[in-house]
Length: 160
Image (cartoon, rainbow, N blue to C red; front, side, top):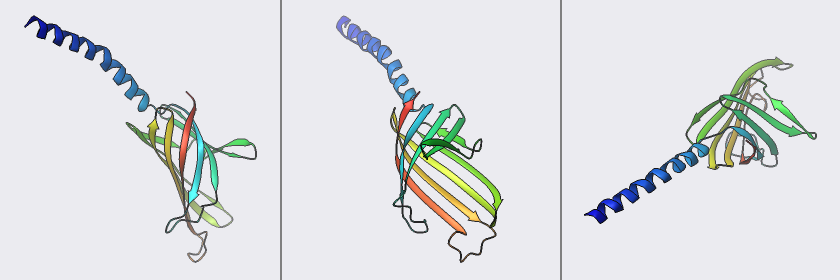
């Protein structure tokens, strides 16, 4: 009986020592804070504008509930929709999104950007990006009147 009790105590002590580290690793796995960078490659699917040849170098900056999105062009990083992006997180997944509108030479436009992400591991994200644009005043027969675009890739954490 003493052996069984000693064995159970050893098992209990090991569980106590191991469990916090398991929680810590899950905490890291569910943490999106940091700067994430990668390339998303456009793809073609029904109702999407054909973007198969486009590759977009993109950066996501996340700090708590704050998020910024940047794309790389002409040797510099340019912020997309400054102040418009929001993030919704649930465990290993997050949705980063912005919806805005404006006017240009063609009239009113409404645009949505969305990044659906999941953690591959603590330092990489699987990213699916899509954008839909409705040029409200443009005639439906014009290709640019309603646009949907998609791309996907893997981002690496470059800074905590």
